[in-house]
Amino acid sequence: MGPNEWLNNYDMDAMMYLFREKISLRRWKPNRVAFMNCMFSNQIITAYGKFDGNKRGYKVDNNLLEYGRGELPYHGSTCSVWSVDVDRLYIPICVNQIHWISMCVNLVNRTVEVFDCGGKKNNRAVEAFAVLIPRIAKAVQSSDKKKDFNVKQYTVSYVPMRALNKSGNYYGAYSLRFIECHLLGLDFSLVNDENIQEARHKIAFDLWEAANDEALQYRMSTFKPPKRAPEKTTPRAFQAEKYIEAEYKEVLGDPLFAQVMAIFVHKLKYSGRVIHSFVCKQLLTAKRHELCTQIISAYGKFDGNRRGYKLDNTMLEYGRGELPYHGSTGSVWSFDVDRLYIPAFVNQNHWISMCANLVNRTVEVFDCGGRKNNRSVEASTILIPRIVKAVQSSDKKKDFNVKQYTVSYVPMRGLNTSGNDCGAYSLKFIECHLLGLDFSLVNDENIQEARHKIAYDLWEAANDEVLQYRMSTFKPRRKPSNSFEFIIVVFDIFQFIILIYTLLLLL
Image (cartoon, rainbow, N blue to C red):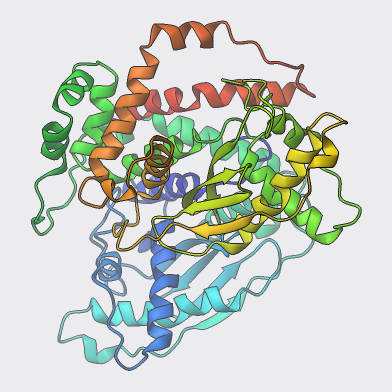
């Protein structure tokens, strides 16, 4: 949780879990409340699209009913039924994948109060909850009580907010603190731009404190996921043992990674998602030097001033092979390098990857969802040729033009039906393309084994003497522009290890 980094889904989920447990352990006085996670918000918004297209024939998905019965979220689940045991729902929402808000849904008063530090009206996103939650509340009632419930849309109100979050970095912190204020009956004015940085520090401290809380450690260590309908496929642990038997046994013999694998084998989904999120973050090198993020950010500037736009020095460092720092080669694009492989995190919720061919002037996009991510991809097709030209020697620049590269999407069908494996697919597609292998070798039947192989590769790298030596003797190529930048670069390297250690305390 860097000083200028937005809170992500797993940050918000961790705090909502903590709120849930504080109520369950009676550390907070309010009762008859439920705290939803980000997955619930995403599912509601997705379900509303289906509802809007077929209002009469729409049926509530079983996953949403599990929330209504208190079976989800798994960790801290209460089995408290909405409108029977629960009167209020607190929900975090990431609007358009760029802006956190939160809300309180009152099942008794049939109202939705929205807390948005930006003072905006997010009508479409909020409407999904106002429309679908009364349907879920009715569907989870006993048959003799259903007649007492109607599905009329709830009334929406926005809590007035003025002149907050001027920096634009604290939507997530504000959303969490507004939930806490509303729940405990505190005035929202207690949280403002003068103390929001301290509020973020308090969130970090609360999570650290929870990791060392004996009661929470015990509850996590004794957690057992609820029994679900048996799966048709062979259990995943045995599939891994079947396809990569030697590697699997080797990992299980490691004192650290055996515990990490246990998280997956025993289906501790909350912890598994946290680990998955941090594994995905390792695709990026340093928070100030993420090529894809830099490209997309720079494209916004370029689009607003095409004639006057000048490339940032950071992107030129990529073009000269000076970045990423770790494993930097000093290889200049189009002089020493013909192809670039790039992972991209689209809308902060979906991994794709691409190959930019600097010789053929093409960009091939690998998206397991088969989507067209035009805006994100366009940024690369327009700015990469500019970077290529800018890093050439003065006598060679005239041979290069900045015409936009041609885009093509590799056809994908019926992949990632679970919705959880886009990161694994993106990495394996890069590997297949690089080695000239057919993409059909990676599919939903073996993607879990592919994920295990990624875990094994990382474990193997951690024990590789050559890599250990290269990392131990690593020195940044240039002096960071400030102390924060150096801290962030070093912090990312060890972030995943620290997370695993923290989770082991919880297990």
